[in-house]
Length: 325
Image 1 (cartoon, rainbow, N blue to C red):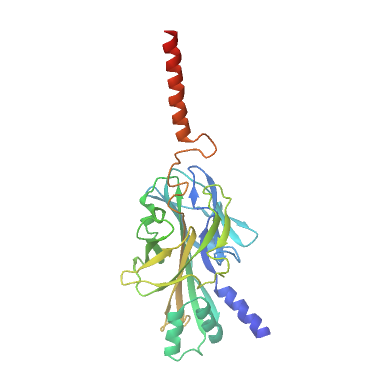
Image 2: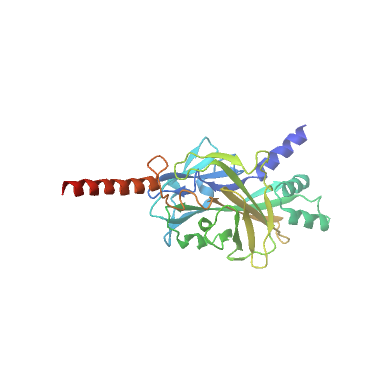
């Protein structure tokens, strides 16, 4: 029992993906909102990100990259790190955080379980092939996260600007020009160059009620019975150009993750190095409120009735004036 408890503790410790989340990724100009760092899973954060771990925190909008001061962040319930923001002019915005490396020592059994649990299957396969499953590990890990959100109706090209993180996702097209039922191509960059043959996992949280810009969303999974894990959803692999295609089956908040891990044979301190990346954005259906202007008011007078009534009124006035003359 004690050994099982320790294994669970280690898996929780090692399985902290870092995501940047918003209640809604659709904002109105000058609307106040919150960017939240979830350190755990996309749906539950286990602990905060201390400011000394942040190598970079940036916002990109209208061709300009702005550094986020550490003093602007605050912590909620010792589990979520948050940044209050105020949306500016209409456009497609990017927010990112990059953390400094940290080391962790793991027994062979714990390391193998972590690789399987977090979907680092290529490394697990390599350890099996090399007959080193019995070797302990000392891993250096770092995390780099991004979120893309839309302010107003104007689409800008800021989504395509790399933040020059050691590893990062960069979409091939603007996610906010895509809709449910379609797909999105994304490129994975390692040190600014395409990373080929890399495992990527993509998933989404569906929406019961899709009301943009008011923060009043109710979240549900893509299906009522689905349980989201680190490796649930779509299991993808990048091509020679580092590109993979994410299916967008329904409206909701989409997120993707990857862990690029290598061995360090010549180091006396480390055995492995990993670089983690995540990206999140929101997808709506094509005829959502933010994508077109309604031609009528559902609670008012229908357009056709207004037109017919106007012609009738003009006809009556014409008869009255004709009779008087």
